[in-house]
Length: 120
Length: 487
Image 1 (cartoon, rainbow over the protein chains, first blue to last red):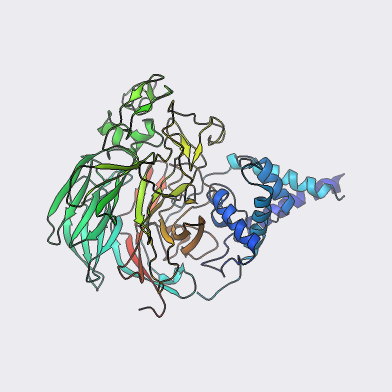
Image 2: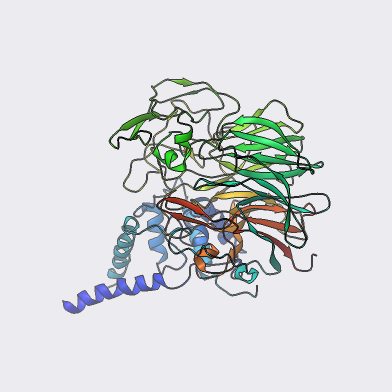
């Protein structure tokens, strides 16, 4: 029982630690541009800018928390978009269609990885 | 075991989701802010590969706008007023090649001077009008000041903004609202103006019919701390309204883009239902765009979670203030501060369906002056370069991290926003918080007439405390950005 409790406490602490370290900054001008040559990623970028950008500018924290540096699986993000969480509102299918959500997920995945240093 | 992992993540997210209200605001002006010095180091500013940045002038007090004449000489406005009720003389300065300056004209105690444009040998300046009401001024190169229009409704939270000359030869300008969301309240007392002008309020551009919603608040105009006031929309503080009450539209009005002939003449309405149309610019194909500062989480009718917006302006259109956010209607459910109630419509009948914004920008980013790239040499032709002053949390509402403090470029066809010039480091923020020599609070971006140089007007340090904003004198900087090999 004690072991289970320790494990339960350890994992959130570890994740919170991970959330608190790595930078959430991605893409230009600090790093290489976010590659949007894939059509789904390019469409997802437009969806992101319409619905997510204002609270998570560039995927960083702002009004809401950063989303670029969270080790959260895609299905959880989809759930959060559809159901909302805390102060974040839900975005139903009539607002963000399933296809747009797929594209948004493709963009978020690419955005998370856009951390390749460039010589500026 | 396999189902424990998803449950764990769901549990963790629920835990994190509930954290929002427990976390303190962490805006760029909050906390430990360096105010004693303003070091300037271009190496602390990140730009896309191939671009360089350098300071043109430093030590300015509240610079807000830049203009260039035919010879490429750089002229800068100093506002003469900043939030926090700091009053200085508004000035138009010519920046000399050495970086020092010569005063061209000095205004009266009626700042802030918010924008300047140069056209056919004269400067056109928006005088914010915190004391006497807003004005558009023509200033000759010898410093002679001639008002073209006066008594604009600018004695409140927002001012007369950014004159630009359109392809039709008219002078277009923005006029901000008196209040956050059409109801005068104690937040306006904190701004400083409610005590000066207790009867001042918003003015609609066309006739409107009210829902009759009223708001009870503390009454800061009396010494009795228990005294309350009831205030309705588009009404003086302490004046209630009734359902079906009609407020007559007037010109000039609040929250609008208006225009006058360049030589002066009658004012005409271009668009209304905006909140604080701060930046105006025509795209290369002649379309007028406006940057609009969104609602704050403050006052008697706080609105939460809405961004700043870039709008393509359609003649005669209504853009939604005070009952829409970014084209979405207040429906009594959305946009409520955490733990608070959702704002309900103030208008019994909406003047129309607002258009969709061209782009959504960060909540509280204070996306202000902007310009379009017209040069293949500079690059990003047709994109809007928007200066983001940065949040003024917590006075405007809470943020979890600094928002703004950079220049972004916007593809107005797709709404995609990309950082262009931003401070280096693990986090976004002003140089005074990051302890670097980079950008502080960019308030305007303007291209040189040949389009090859982007000037960034950096207002300087503004700390924010529980007592309000604390802008710092002589910390403003003008930067210029060029593309390597283009000069």
